[in-house]
Image (cartoon, rainbow, N blue to C red):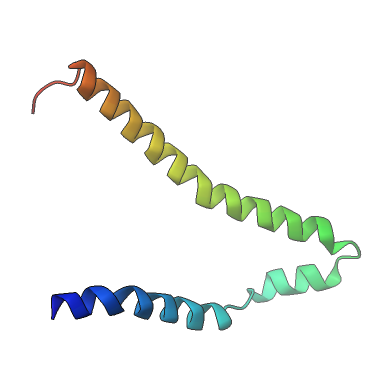
Length: 81
């Protein structure tokens, strides 16, 4: 049972993600703002880079934190709990 679950779980997750992506729509205000812009390319790129920042910043902070903890643990500077 566990082997079957391990084999099919990633496929089911990917299927749900792909199905969900097809249904994603912009909020009405964003949709109207893009439609009314004469040069909407800059607005679209602004949204794109802000999304990349929102995704990338937490990963960067977690990576720096994990690296700091590992270095402190290797040096023996991390106090025992």
